[in-house]
Image (cartoon, rainbow, N blue to C red; front, side):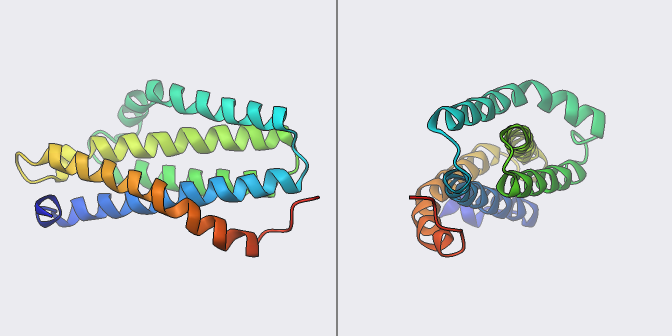
Length: 170
């Protein structure tokens, strides 16, 4: 509770961003599973998709600092945060509309790269928005919020999204 009371307005925006992006990611995973079943993706193909997405996430750590420097995100992170959010939305939309495995792979890898950069950029922005001496608390709060969305959102998404998705083939 003390960490929440210490939030500056900019820190509250970072916390909301983590909550919304974490929740959106969990909803995407549920929707993607439904989509992959609906288009007949085999378990082996799904494994390739998950592995490629994981690789993109792992490699994103190498891209964060150069990308922040190149875009000025190390001084003013908002444009990079907005660009990443847009890239995530577009990547997820393409991945959920495509029936081509190659397109789903590229969109999912790009989506994961942008989402990972977004997470890293919001973490890097903590130093500029946290009250003096409170950066550690804010980072902990952001991580807790993202973790909580990973626990709470999938059951909600599993109950809500199937009503919007086409039924999986028998």
